[in-house]
Image 1 (cartoon, rainbow, N blue to C red):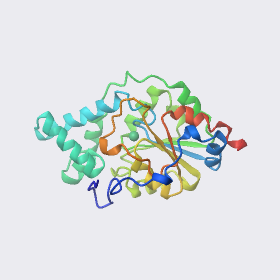
Image 2: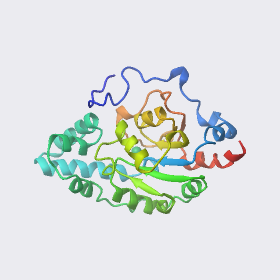
Image 3: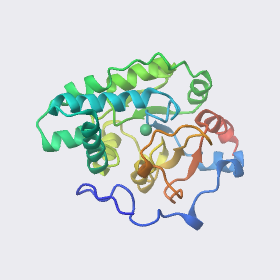
Image 4: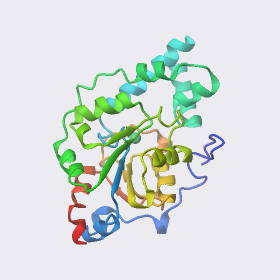
Length: 265
Ligand SMILES: [Mg+2]
């Protein structure tokens, strides 16, 4: 499978995803001591927001997705089906719909971000176990998201996590260039003085872990539980976990709790 993308390179590797023999063992088969040892040097913890800090079967992402469709429908006077097709084209080609709109049309980024993140978050409840697990991590914690700062803040507040993070690096801070663009990670590392070789990244989109891995971060892919609704695009759902993913987990809080004993490793 080849997915054509921007000048930055393909969004997913060509052909079957790399991995196979090099693919990581499931975390269930890895001892706490082994996991702890891999994170022993980490002093900065970086989290994606959407479908990572809240589960992929939450109705939050579909609501944002619908608002994006509506934005395009109103902007171009399209019916829902045409608007949806255009949205998915932009997303696949440019990484975000906003990036496509910015490159092809002169639209206001702030107007777009405000509109699409204007959603009802009442379905989100505080996640006490995740809060406790993140709080127990030694060092700095940051959010790195392709969404807006306001969205990340409001969502983290609803989850009861906002007080745990030092800062949020959003799509505006990224100069509207979404992950997985390498420049965005470098801008993030510079702005927050993050040394990637001493940092870990948690994220639900496989390709967004490629540059973090290349820069020396420990990478963890957060996946849906078996049978759980998965709102990621079909081309974002890996058939094989590639070797730039160090760990996978369908229980972020549980996984982080397993790192608690890492100082003893
Ligand atoms: Mg995400």
